Length: 254
Image 1 (cartoon, helix red, strand yellow):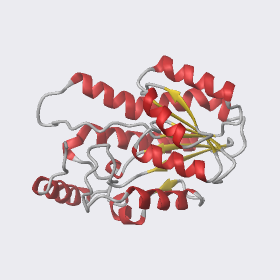
Image 2 (cartoon, one colour):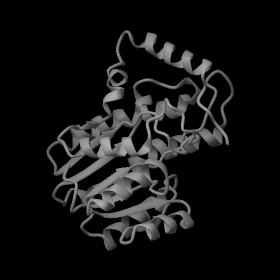
Image 3 (cartoon, helix red, strand yellow):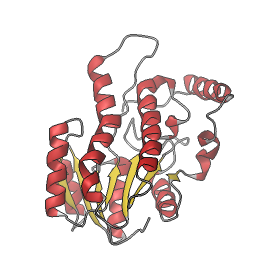
Image 4 (spheres, one colour):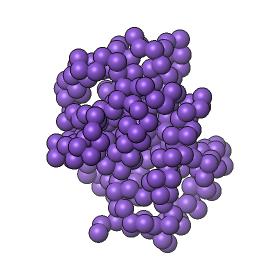
């Protein structure tokens, strides 16, 4: 995709990967609009980046999604890039009971959120040149994390959806890209400085570099073996990966 001169809407842009990507696109000379649930955080980010704009949005709410789409099209008619980044990563127990509220929030945020947001903006994006939809999935789409089974499942689902959407839009002006982050040291679970996590600045620089190419799937070199894992022999790596995290769990809390 072209890396400057765009008008880009990024959901979940007030922290972590979303904020870092938004600030890098802003630095490159794009008009960037971010969304988030909390106005105070939106104000903090936009004030730190003059010229960036914010829209308050709960991505779980279909009515708010439609209202945000109308607002974007009205105020930013040159909008040509949607970056579906908003996500939550709660822990769950696939061997135990289900927390219904958390389960619905996870599916609504990670899967239905990007599906609804894209659908609301697609009629407009189809009229733009160099239009791009970017879905933020995860390496866990290809190598599930058993302690976050539903999160991993929603990321596998958005990977599948992105493939179908890319095919469905193949004769349009809209490209569909997928960014699949590794474990990045953000506050999605707990910013810990764990050496197993990729530093955020390195992830952003590598992701921006790859986005500037013609590939449809964007992932850092370190996770290519994990991206290649799905197949008839995938269970051995899955089991070894999850056993290693039982022995050395991801830190949570403060």
